[in-house]
Length: 180
Image (tube, rainbow, N blue to C red; front, side):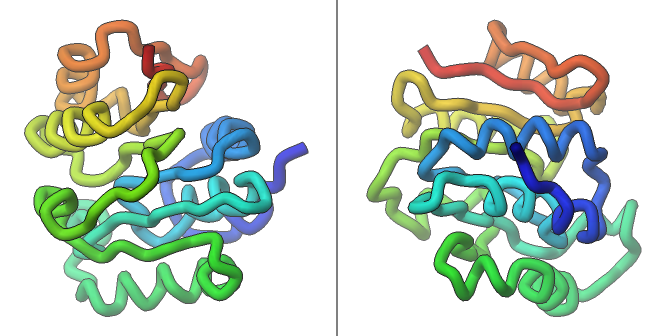
């Protein structure tokens, strides 16, 4: 049984069925990378349901998407995220990686290959393509690559080009593929 109650209480755009899908997948994963954490709604779904010894890397620059949220300073966005997942940070389940996605692999070293990567950061074609390429090169067979907002033309184009065997989650804008 998954718990998405805290995720539902956290501001964000993901719908309950999308949060449930993420939570169910997290239950069998040990190292999850979340590309784009915003205010922590999906972070909560993942981290509240990951295996007991698991770790979620919340990767974001917390600049947000001004076309949706206005011009909220990144320090405010980051502060709200931390408030929403403070218990998970304190428990060592969520590790924050505050960085521009384009510079992520230059600035951190990945000591353990993630067994799940969830892409929901910048929705520009170039950004989605970069995130998919970067993580595919580091993921082992059997790992889950997934993302949100497949209904965006830019996201769909990048996913279809780079993950041709991708599957869609009915009734949602989620896409996924298990690395072969």
